[in-house]
Length: 373
Image 1 (cartoon, rainbow, N blue to C red):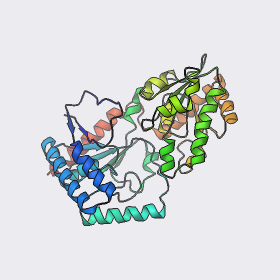
Image 2: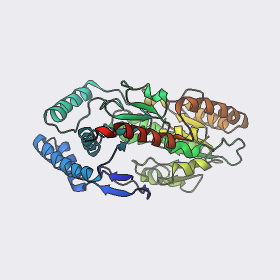
Image 3: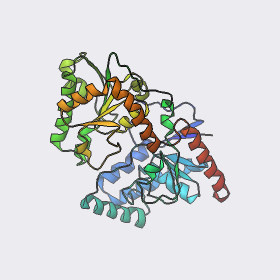
Image 4: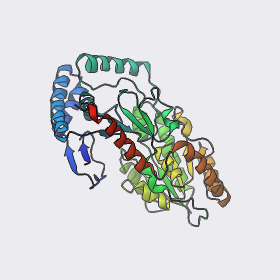
């Protein structure tokens, strides 16, 4: 049986829960909100009290479900996931982390490091209230957890490779039979945005860099009137930023804007994909769509592409040259080989990843079952 746990830690983004779960269980939203509000207010006593109440609530539901394993995409947050992880450790149940995206994180400042250490030491260790993260690197929060990576290349990026399996990415199996479109008649370019303003608030981008990205998107579309652009707005952004503020005066010209269309559907019609270095660009390569990376130097800690699989540009003139080249038949024929070499390194068991992942989880459960508490 497969259970889905709605943690109620984020606002719904319009994505429906698949209907093939045997049960959907929702964590009490009021308890979750109260705990987070107390954490934000930095009230230690109220935080500890509210987290303990939430913990009892979660433990009651986990005891009711009594799962053989728990599967999530990170053991570093949020709070409900941490508490589920605690339950798994206490009951000796395997806790699996499926790699959801690229693993790079922005460099940690001394201020951030000191704050993280203080929070973890005070709450997690002293007060037994797991609201902090032990470290900043993916896949290392608890050594007892199991990591399910896309390939060995990604597992090499973490510090502790014990309990690590290379299983591919089940979500990308659907692209296995999708081929590179060689002869492009009426080009469609997919632009996938990223939460530029939030990245600025996090200190990753500067205000000028955010303005440059918006300006680049405007220039790209306005200087290529014969090409149709689809702007796929990041789920955490406000679509009005694009539909009214940035492109409002040209609404209905040579572009369309969406936030709800699925990437798989969009990649079926796209001939080229554009981002600042997003997971969506990785999806595009897997789906057989050439990519253009805009201002990759803005994320200098991040580089998942190899310089062959993508065009890298830092102004509109370079973009226009790259776009013209990416639509030519001779380049797209070369891209077939680039893509094959790239996927051989980045994606294990392409086309069979879902089966491999399920079998791996099943085997670990069978091996661990005699020790369940």
